[in-house]
Length: 476
Image (cartoon, rainbow, N blue to C red; front, side, top):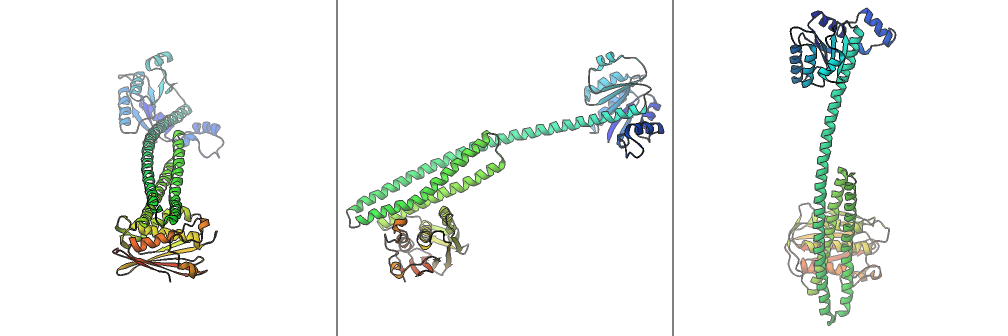
């Protein structure tokens, strides 16, 4: 409810104002409203809907005090009707000037029947403003109602405008803070990208050193009876390494593109929180893919060095088998996404193994890749099952695909080095040979293969819970 203050030393003036602004309209007023707003069927006029909380002051000093108190209570007066002559106190012009010093937003209507001040003198006293109206007594009811309605509405709109401006200033401040935070995040992202780039450079250098080691090993074997086979061995390893390195390079290139896109959005002031969230998600997946595949390449090199020197130097530790299998499958996702094949893993979540996780992961990876290359025709939809069972003293891994199967003659040779039926299609003849060496030497277990031509192929891998040297394989 809008508040109005009546300031006049005449009690009857106060009653007249209240009768006009609060009481039921007189017949004469209703006639005027009907002329303004239509016939008697008209629902209500703005005058009917207007409601006011009216205060009374009889001296200028009292009016100043009431306006101060109302503002302090958070219930300010929107409009003051001010008489000019109110002896023995200060006159209305002085009171208006004093109120405006403290509350310049208050609407004022000066009411007088005298000519103590000319219009120019009043403006000289209180200044030029759009919040001042002047009426002479006697005044009619419609004029009072119109002034009350229009000026209280004007005051209300002014308050709403001030509140809106304050909200806008607050929002601008928040946006400026957000821009500052985005700049900080952008700087942090650039630093993280630089750090990742440095890590990739270091890993690349390590891979180059490992490749040099492979070449040195080749040089030592050239003089031996395995010289001819070594040429194919190096070629196959280079092919095997190319897959994870290629995936890493692709993921890094994709991350660079996404980073440039995010930087462009930031420079264009078009970046949203969702853009940053999407980028962080992409960055996390890409870096994980890069590191996973580089680790895989590094482990492959270690495995090859083991084949060359008959013993691997991979780290032994306790790891969760199920989660590690899923990590290996994640590193193979770029290959698997190109096929329609489905992989199902059955493994106790709490199953742990004290062994060599890198070697174990290489076995799973090579078995999957062997199925993709040899077991299924192009565009076929195959199924791969990986099951892990815990036995008292060992772990049993059963790997099965429903592909073409392996003939009895070929099954006798699948673990031999360089044996492949798809050499012209990318087969190196080393995948299952590496699996055999890891299973029997690094893990100290044994591996066997069963197959029905045209139906399925199944590998059984027994891994001791505590690794021991030596093992065997069964090609039944």
